[in-house]
Amino acid sequence: MKFNKTLDKIKTYEAGKPIELVVREFGIEPDQVVKLASNENPLGTSPKVAEAIRANADKAHLYPDDSMFELKASLSRRFGVPEESLIIGAGSDQILEFISRAKLNEESSVLMSRVTFAMYSIYALQQGARILRTEDYRHRPDEFIPMMQAHRPDVVFLCTPNNPTGDATSREDLFAIIEAADPETLVVVDGAYMEYAAAKDPAYRIDPAEILRYPNAVYLGTFSKAYGLGGMRVGYGIARPEIIQALMKLRPPFNITTLSLAAAIAANEDEAFVQKSLQIHRQELPRYEAYARERGFEYIESYTNFITWLFDEERNSSEIADALLRRGVIVRDLASYGMNALRITIGTPEQNDRLFSAMDEVLG
Ligand SMILES: *Cc1c(COP(=O)(O)O)cnc(C)c1O
Image (tube, rainbow, N blue to C red; front, side, top):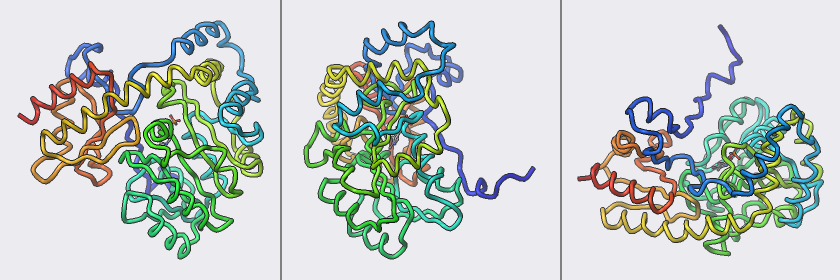
């Protein structure tokens, strides 16, 4: 059967492997599997979120409040931005999709880093757009600005901190790139891991309100990472009302569920849970840096809740990922991104112990 030609160029997104797969394939008990592959919050979710979901358990038959009034009010307070500047998506992924559909067609081009979030190119290819990439995985103004001037891309994706590399773009570099964009170029600042970068170094902290200074930029945030709601699918976009109104035309009604909405409101109000998550992360990340040094391999300095370990020719990331999987530890192999590297979510102290002892066995 023939399908839309744009699909020919798309490689299906490869999600992190689920716990269920390891249970099925290797007969390991579910509570013995350590999943450090999808950058979920290892502490789980706030107890207040679980409470809110339980309190709404008998409302499954009701559509959610489609205006998402309470969630928008809560986000508006948190970021100091007007409610007309907010859009809610089923994950920030859905807002990426709205952006591509709003701006792109067969004549369009998009610009992004050589190694970055895979969904940018997938959504762009769905629209038939051409993908342009920089040489470096880092977001360097001396690469982005000349390419923006030469190609006038319709959308530029800036992922800071960047996934799957874990590095971040300084405020200075990020604003230099945004300011150089043509007024018709929509600049997307994807801050899925911004909470981690902001906690690490203020020079890398971007506030959504700052993005509102620009008529052609949009900030994306998510509840899936630091806020521990990966399974509930809630993200948000922040931009000038003109951009939000365009994206709203593409939003299906009731695009997040009644339970997701209740969960996101509770999560957004529980700052203490996020602070605790950040604190455990700050304490555990150095163990991954020390392990790499001890074993003689490189890593990318991380501004996120994961670390990217880089191997030389003597080691093969796919083989290591496979050997870890057999031991019940799921990590993300970056071979499909053209890197001999592993991306590992920083877990709880116990999960990290398990990862290190499995790595010891694998490396010998
Ligand atoms: C996780 C992630 C997202 C969005 O995740 P959702 O669960 O769809 O909100 C967006 N961008 C990057 C870079 C991510 O890593």
